[in-house]
Length: 179
Ligand SMILES: *[C@@H]1O[C@H](CO)[C@@H](O)[C@H](O)[C@H]1NC(C)=O
Ligand SMILES: *[C@@H]1O[C@H](CO)[C@@H](O)[C@H](O)[C@H]1NC(C)=O
Image 1 (spheres, rainbow, N blue to C red):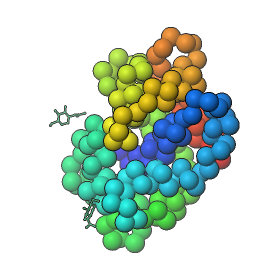
Image 2 (cartoon, rainbow, N blue to C red; image 1 turned 45 degrees about the vertical axis):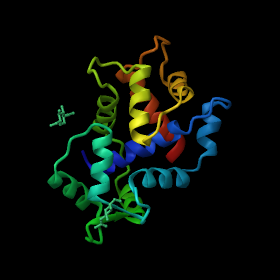
Image 3 (spheres, protein in one colour; image 1 turned 90 degrees about the vertical axis):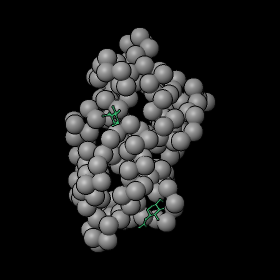
């Protein structure tokens, strides 16, 4: 996985983590500013809050969400965005790279989908969403967060999110929210 893909994934999940059952979702996305979400995404990775993400911290998050990576892969991921070549990534470096590389690639979406789809049945259930959100935050996600995701993403109301529904949902978050 590319660093920017992972960052986009986490950034895309931040508004979801902050779902509030008492307002509609469009209002919700508009209220949370892009900058504040980027910061939240950054600090989900920057565990010791020294304003840099190093390969150890990257490895912690990737392992937490169930992605196996080698030290070499972690170094490569850091290297991809490490303009100053000091082995760690600043907020500014990510912003700069995201500005150049604006595309949400289909493979980014597929990777997030696979991340959620723990049992590989091509469908995401409520318990799978709860599981990934909990791993990512390092604390138990709330049911209303999960219900908020389903309210928005589960178009046919079958209590499962298929790839098409997921893809629409994810693009919707990005478009509403990072435009
Ligand atoms: C990398 O991050 C970890 C976890 O926050 C920290 O303990 C470690 O000191 C950092 N390493 C360097 C070289 O900054
Ligand atoms: C990650 O590695 C562990 C231990 O080697 C293995 O049990 C697990 O299946 C791997 N997970 C993935 C998603 O490859």
